Image 1 (cartoon, helix red, strand yellow):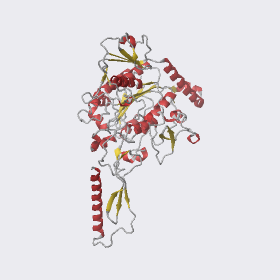
Image 2 (image 1 turned 90 degrees about the vertical axis):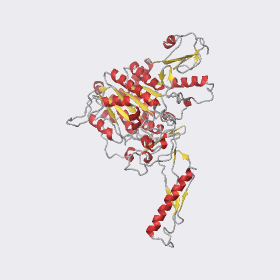
Image 3 (image 1 turned 30 degrees about the vertical axis):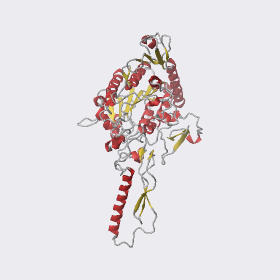
Image 4 (image 1 turned 180 degrees about the horizontal axis):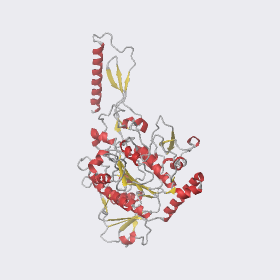
Length: 578
């Protein structure tokens, strides 16, 4: 491009990059000659993401989106009136609250304490106060209640499994002790719990029917009248790294960031001459020297937060559900000093965003879920034992209005110190979204129409008091990822280095008590872990467990056998390094 305005490209939510000479940034933003919706981009001269790119976010109410949301709410009210009676619904119907679900990828509880001091400062300022020192009741003096859950566990290794639990209550593999329904589409398998009044046994799923509204939180929200938003901070078109691409669920939301990051990826590849040779979801913007690239002065993390903030203003009259997966901490750099820089920058953005939302929300009708799916799992650092342990303990915090009718403060507070998972997050989200009737002691509003697909083993964090004796089996945490030392004996360092989403599995071993030889039953290699995979030792069937010709005593023979076994195991693992 030359240094004039005659060679410019523009892009909007509706159009890919196109020539747009002789129009100013202000005119383009305001929709002069072009229809713009939610955002506008303009790049002139030699393309540079920060210096030549002009990028504006301007979310305005789309009347069709609001009308559709209202129509779905009315349909829900009709369902309720058919069950409870028109008079009761009209006189006692309570509006659903707004929900922000901010997921910061790859952040353990300990990592958040090290690198998110501003956000922790906000959480501590609004911290729920529990009875002690003569205080007899649980309370939240600021009008907001912030709770941090220090026993949150993953339910799998990667983002897909943990997001599937929190966003659908489902799994990517069956759980033997539970009655699950198996959905399959385009080679993707999803296993969901049978619960609620719906008769799953009579439902014939042929791969084309939409089952999302039974499980998928975005479909549930839309059905109940929410204006919905989904955000990933990269172009997830054809990406294998998003939950909707690895499950049976389709993503159908009112607003998203997809076009923004796909446009940015395309123009980046276009000017590098790689548009037709590189995958859009693989485009990276940060480098060793620049941990967080700028887009016309905005960091990648700022984009989603600004979009949600404007969405809250534009659709103030409608219930809203927004999910954003942030990648600021998803840094697998080789440089330990560089790795947390993006997270520390994002900490400032998150704290500012939460403060703005809470200060502007005078009616206090917004619930904020701040969580991670797992700790760091990629790059060289998962070979360190502390990182392996932190991986199982993701950061989870929830900020709620203190006086909201859905909250039992005592239960909410005590659950901070209970074992919880993404399944419990999902249960709680479903509870918040469900329309309810005030002063209904029988809780008919939650039990009859809107609880299909909620895992029966999960808990509502706001109202159920989770037992201190809950264990990994109860919570449906695979033993390989169970954080409870009372339930496993193998919390030892392992060999996996966090490459992609795979880990190095232990060898399957075979030991012959007659020959006292220890052999690997199969070759070593990197393979994807499964829910039920375990390291195991197989003993060959022998006619005698002891060598009767030996001059050793039984005790000495056993000691020698154990030492030989240990030696053979050690040699086998040494061979692995070669």
